[in-house]
Image 1: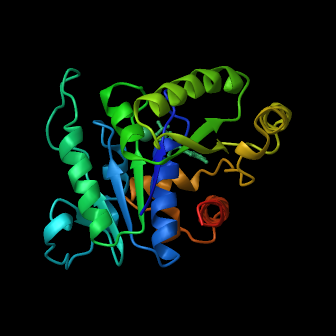
Image 2 (image 1 turned 180 degrees about the horizontal axis):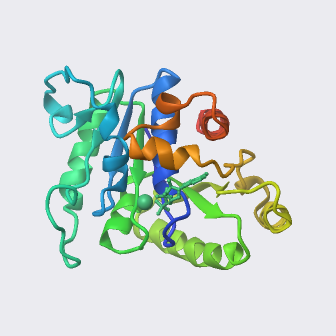
Amino acid sequence: MRSIALANQKGGVGKTTTAIHLAHGLALAGDSVALLDLDPQGNATLALQGMIPDDEPDAEGAFEALQNLGSNFWMLPSPGVHRNIDRRTVPDVKKLATLVEGLRGAGIDWLVVDCPPRMDAWGYAGLELCEHVLLPVQAEFFAMHGLSQMMQTLASARKQFPGRGNLLGVVATLVDGREEIAREVLDDLRENLADKMMRSVILRDLSFVEAASHGKTLFDYRIDSKGALCYGSLVREVLDGCA
Ligand code: ADP
Ligand code: MG
């Protein structure tokens, strides 16, 4: 089983959007996928509510805690969706690690973890559970600055959890191709990060907000959208990069 955490200590950079589209895209490509919502705010859980099948099959074993979202696609909802999670509450990493081992044993191909916009106990748990990290960055002026902080966090996570927290790549999100600054920032990121910069770029598309309000990904809601095309490309790149 390959595992990818979507992490960035900044909010609003497209972590959740990338997590749900990457997970669903991998499932549509034919692999079995479990998406773990590690953000107590539960945005990923809410953004996929419209994909829960009416005739949800009874799950057993490692899948019991998971919500089925269609064929070969599962989600562990955020515990924060149904009860208020106090800031001091920490995740039970041991229990999560046991669940992840169960999924591995059950033959799940991919684990995708959506981290909160903070590198607190929840964010660190995401790094501890995953071999790879995909780092979404918004193509804006301070992108490089925020990134260097995140790189330090990843380096310390790798020390603490050997074999975990390896940077798979940085993906530029919310890119408006008409803006000169976005193009400049992209060039800058490519120059600095070289092969750690994903070739796929996620363009700004209003359909994302609409799809989320329907509780669906764009692959379900509007397959011919610009956003679905962008994430389709990212899914293929991840499949190639993690082969
Ligand atoms: P994060 O998880 O990093 O906080 P989100 O994925 O929740 O970020 O994205 C923040 C907001 O931006 C959400 O309302 C989401 O629907 C919207 N959004 C994300 N990606 C795009 C995009 N490519 N184009 C337009 N809106 C987007
Ligand atoms: Mg989020």
